[in-house]
Amino acid sequence: MNRSGAAPAPRSPGVRTITLDADGVTLSALLLEAEQRPPRAVVVALHGGGMNAGYFDGQAHPHLSLLTLGASLGYTVLALDRPGYRHSATRLPEGQSLADQADSVHAALDDFTFRYETGAGLFLLAHSYGGKVALSAAADPAGGNLLGLDISGCGHTYAVARNELPGSPRHGHWMRNWGPLRLYPPNTFRNSASMVAPMPERERAEVARWPELFREVASRVLVPVRLTFAEHEAWWRHDEVTLAGLAAGFSRSPRVVVDRQPDAGHNMSLGWAARSYHLRAHAFFEECLARYEATTTVQPERAS
Image (cartoon, rainbow, N blue to C red):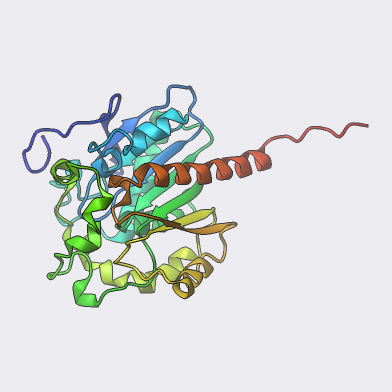
């Protein structure tokens, strides 16, 4: 049973629920392991505010699930319920601060890597508030086996007033979260009921601080970063000047890619564009893997 007492949501074939120890706090997660052993790498997915890990295993259409696509490409995919969601909601009813969430993610991934094969290492794929957590975790030197970041729906300059931010008392902006209905398969909103969850208070309280936190966090990220904005993204400014400033914030990252996803709203992993976005993310991960292999593999001797 989930926090609301409803029956467990349907899952894609092979997807199972596991728990991980995050330094004394138990976090739940959805896991689909790659058939090959070891996997090429592990994709760790972090959901946005007011959702849970089910966001990455959408059931409205067979092509939505990040987990099944990743596994078919040789990756193990772990979609983590962030602190304050699902299993940890009772233990952490107010959630955790952004910094504490980053620490919890590191601890949970330490537990995961101790118990499961991880191949070349870890990629973080994150959405919205999960992107803030992913960046905060990547800025911590403890993330030594992190190969790259792919983030959607998270910028550094809000497009709305402070009292209209996600999680604020006036938050009821359905259109900003979803965009036009035509962007989503039938039954999307019926199926999404099981993945919607209250946004914990500590998380909500830090939403407005992100623009001031961003630059310090981004400047400490040392791995390649890709950021994607949906065509119908309404929470964040994503004009060319703003995106140039966003990319410039990653001053120590070896590569920064800013991309746009056509025919998509903020919750792009639940829309018709999900497969396109997930494939683009994995193409970026392939590039990161190639970079990693080029720097860690012994080069062949030159022919005489």
